[in-house]
Length: 357
Ligand SMILES: Nc1nc2c(ncn2[C@@H]2O[C@H](COP(=O)(O)OP(=O)(O)OP(=O)(O)O)[C@@H](O)[C@H]2O)c(=O)[nH]1
Ligand SMILES: [Mg+2]
Ligand SMILES: [Zn+2]
Image 1 (tube, rainbow, N blue to C red):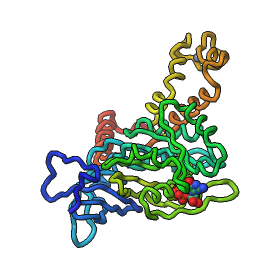
Image 2 (image 1 turned 45 degrees about the horizontal axis):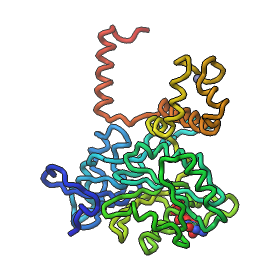
Image 3 (image 1 turned 180 degrees about the horizontal axis):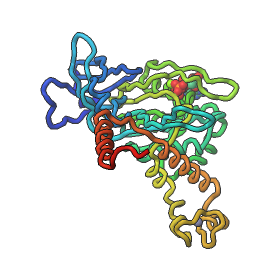
Image 4 (image 1 turned 30 degrees about the vertical axis):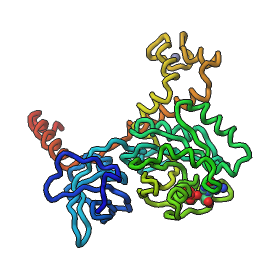
């Protein structure tokens, strides 16, 4: 018997008859692996799920605690997703045409974690703006963001890029490590205590699975050399999976993202750029566009150097992207709600005397 408490499960009030609790440990296309009291089982979604979920975000995801109809002779059926205490989402653009997305859907990457490791390599592809985008998305995920700079063995002096990151985000812990030499790994012990879950996020090739393998003390995930020409990864990991470390904490490894699209990031932006938003409140006009308006506090702060241009530009571009995504977001509306709105609409048109030609 497996004690689900070791997987971070906290007893819920009453589990309905015929259902058992579990934690989703793996997701490949429509197939789930779920850790239950009798070990790992494979599972699919109960059909009703597709009709009652209001948005894609309600579908189960790696890290979720679920209730399922256990089936000892085949696939079990996932019946309910229990409330989440943490969730990391990204924007999933579809229908790209000449740089425009037709629609944006929420893609939930992982749930119910305690820490978000924003993993970035110190080698050729090092980029603080990108780290800050991940950070914006992680700030209101419900987990604590931690920045992990990998491959410290590849750079002559890692303290320079380290100082650049800590200077840009003074409120977030940053660690420089090497999975190859073991440097800095002991600094991570503080996060890896029993029952805690950490999600690994970052571009392909930054060394997420390499770090997982070191922490697991065995190779559980494939790793692959990055491309010589541009230091980019080869998208080696293709599915999300939760692992139980020997320390009793859990890691969710994820596939590297080509780009992280901000999704519903308003609060994360406000939290990460509170200083910038403070200047905004001091402009003379409430509808100031901070371009040439008299009494603009932002222009004044930029001019006297109390606000750096780089920081202002990062803020403006994240705000702009978040607004764009908000405007394009569509939700999969469940059929009942859609039918109801069609019924209401036809009642309305009848009352108005039908279609006016
Ligand atoms: N020198 C050095 N190389 C590293 C380190 N960590 C990872 N690498 C190398 O970086 C390459 C990519 O590592 P992976 O662990 O596959 O990267 P990943 O982030 O899991 O990539 P995806 O699965 O594609 O998202 C491999 O060649 C690793 O050996 C490190 O600390 N030092
Ligand atoms: Mg990987
Ligand atoms: Zn202004």
